Length: 375
Image 1: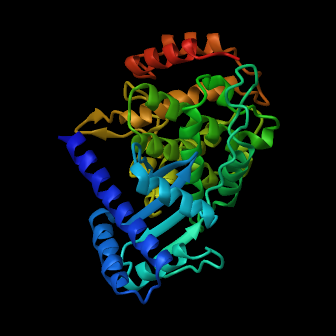
Image 2: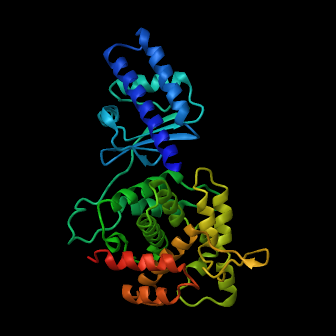
């Protein structure tokens, strides 16, 4: 039943693309004054209504058309023509928001039928580009690969610019996670995709990036779809966002925390969840993961929360991110200890299954780490 719904939605998307390309082709061959222009524009608008919930996000990634983060495969000639048309106009992304008018649709068709120069932002339509800087030699198994430098810089900028009084750059995060997902399709070695922490100051955003990478990799190995991969990637990037509400002296302290300092640190999941709940367009699981990533599988950990007298269980997504968080924290050099060998970390995690971690997820994580190319 779910698959039928998905296929129907993709069919509606393809109908929209077909009507859009027919309208663009007509406008290119003739003019906007041609008698068919109004009829074709109305058809585009009608087909758009079928697929437009809150927004439509059209992207080109690696010569594939991705709509609302769903790759449109076996797309046919109209999708290929749209990709070529957008590339010709130096566009790799179009946002269409709910409430778009027929007049805006007509203007978009005219813009895309033309040279594409001087594209104007419309009230509900924006043209842009996706900052795709995939690592060049993906298929060279001897090369150590990491997320594209621009992706890491983008995560750094987003995290460093976040504050209790400023909303996050959600679109920037979305682009980074889409890049991760497409990178996984080219590179089987997960350890190649993790970023080393070069300096202490880099830990926060490098750790966030690695947790997202590891979480998406786990989800992919479980057979979860691209939409879920995207959501868990965003949640992984933001799992520790509540630390910006904790004293910087405590977060950056190089020694052991006092009881009072640790008590303050334990509040960061609650702070993070409250902050993320106020931000539009984030996946619903993001605040849940921020709140639960330090809860343990057996109900211990923090923050303590009970339901009908019983400890609250972590959601599946939070369990996945918790595994990623623990693994990357131990494999990273820290001021108070050296990095731990991968085999030692996996052995320790296996011992903690059933208490700290979901046994099934731990077995799966160990399996994908041991079977993944190491270099």
